[in-house]
Length: 131
Image (cartoon, rainbow, N blue to C red):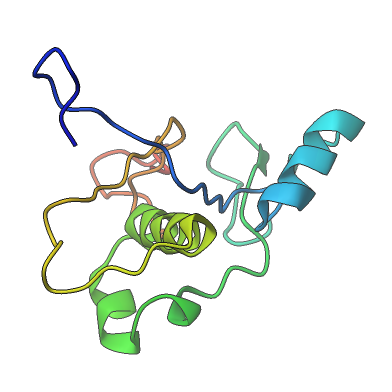
């Protein structure tokens, strides 16, 4: 879509969220309004060698709801979360993409991609690193 000034226009048509507070927009908004914290004690891996004992994990997230098992096995956790959010945003938009419009749409990810680790095992060169 091109505006009157010749520049491309961008239209937000849908939103999606996968985060420690909620998996739906309504539940996320409610959690923010109520001031809920997503911080919990880390139980997914041993914390005896790190200083931080809490994290904001995404409980109950099943990446196979958004990707096939092979893709899940080949992708980092943050990628799985991004794909899920993008699919939820597309569903929220009500748009139906087809072969004619593969490059006429896009997805934007907001802040929160700080955890780039693929596993819970710290790298051998840095015993205190977790990701």
